[in-house]
Length: 251
Image 1 (spheres, rainbow, N blue to C red):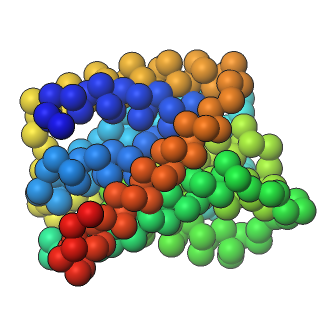
Image 2 (tube, rainbow, N blue to C red):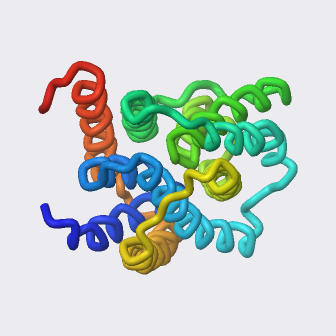
């Protein structure tokens, strides 16, 4: 598929993900890994696009008083510094793609659980558990270029931690601050790589998709089928990366 189709693909990715409070980083990484070979450019581009999409959702959640800082801060007190540090790790290309592939497989599984889940009894996490969960997701976010919401949100939904709208708001802001921390980490490490001609086209596409997706989320449309298909795509690309870079197997 020609690279010229990327803005169209990313428009629809942003539309879907923004409708459920995500930035789309896992799918951006999945698609970019099929077109680009510079892994620093791949995760830099994904983090920038993540920020563009979730910024729209974050503004809407704050304006409608859905976002709660009291619920939010324990998750990011450890995730922000670890996302910053994770982004500064200079990995070999093979190791990066193996970590990315593993992250995509986890993303696909977590996203699938979100749509096939059977909710457990409602439960809360103590602050130390929130610090650990936020820190682990933040570190993976910085290393791979995924904002982390796709890991955090399904976990909180499955345990029925809070209202789904509150969780979506938390995930949106969580992705925003971790993506920003990751980008600063890349800049400090000197590994921030961007194709400005391509990124400008993709930014326009994801902003348009993110705006429409955020609007659709307020209409509470059922996007379950599209979510399951996206989860399968992300899982497949993650598996493909691991087989290719870990075992030299093309599928």
